[in-house]
Amino acid sequence: MKSNKSAKQSQFGPLQKKTFSSALNRFFEDQCPQLGGSLTRQVIVNHVQTLVEEFFPPHSHLRMGQVMWPAVDENETASYGKSIEKTKLKPVFVDMIAPEDIEAMLKGEKAKKIRQRATVRLFEQAKQQQAVFTGVDVATMMRLSPATISIYVRDWEKQHLNSVPRRGTIHDMGRSVTHKKQICYKIIVEGKSIEQTARETNHSPEAITRYVKDYKRILACLSQGLSPKDTAFVAKVSENLIYEYVSLIEENQLDIRKQRGIYEGVDFDDLPF
Image (cartoon, rainbow, N blue to C red):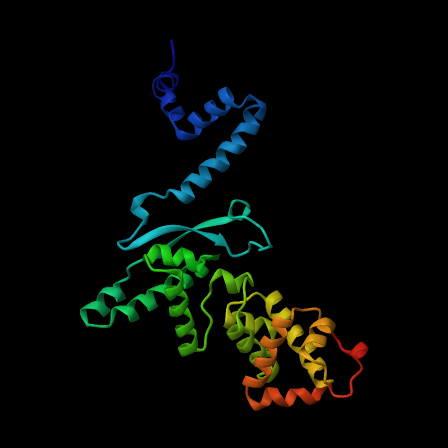
């Protein structure tokens, strides 16, 4: 005669196997026998289940006005020609509509200002979850054009003298004279560390180091009287980039222009970069 425990196990035990994990394991066993035995299959099943839970969270986890959106992992590295299929993604939860948006509408605030603030909030909320959005991500969520999002971001950065954390800046993709200007000023004039500047401008330390090294190389070449074309050859950068930095040197405050004298009469072989 079966014990009470054994009887309950026989009766209710099968319920434990009526799961997505069990169904997926059986699918791999039947359709993908080359994967190996049960231990190998279980590792894959566990990983798939984790991805499903990340990308399809229970609705109870979402607040009113909140959505889940797949962003690029902040720690991912960007490289030329790297497709999104080969890029590590990370689902994040962001507030499409926040209580302050509704309050602002009730107060009669202009729609453009509300949308701009929401745009910045989406980028910042992704960054808080160790992920980064592109302008296209935010444009799609807000049903606006990428050009409009870019205008919102540039205006915000100009008004607040701070960088909005988006993939182009975090992963150093694309051109951004404004950010180079901010970074070089903080490092060279204000004497801030690379780590502090990285926090204040939402850039990677590697990107900041490269900007400052380029700045110093170009500044040294110009101080020696080299033309932009010759400077591009010596500094090993494009001629277009030379003109960007020439503009930086000329447009920044007098403190930076005084830096020109630092490298006068210095042998290029002695430069520490």
